[in-house]
Image: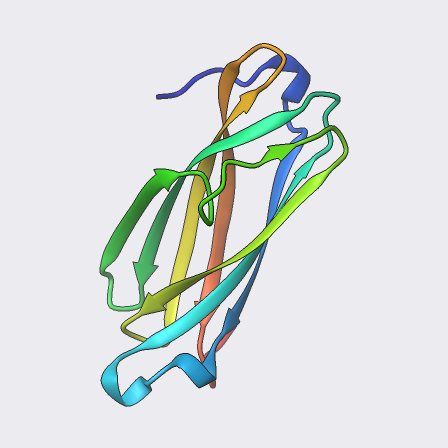
Length: 132
């Protein structure tokens, strides 16, 4: 699915991600490295949008790739009004201290009901004593 982005929203919806290693939840001796990531979706357009679905590609340091698809985020399909933002925090569990996540959201322009994709640039997950 590669729908065209409605003209009015071209480049107007942006995603920022802030990852963090969760040392207290991790167990490195058991190959369990927990990361949280806080995502902020900024809607700088003049249209309301609704975030309908997510797609994540998680590449672990070992080379193992996992893809995650689902409706909405954190159990919601949030509406984001013009000039507003939506923020949530989620987690990823890796088998090693480093990895990379990237993906996209499928959103709908509520005025036209046209779907469009918002890319999420790759971001690094790095545990303690890893090069950032």
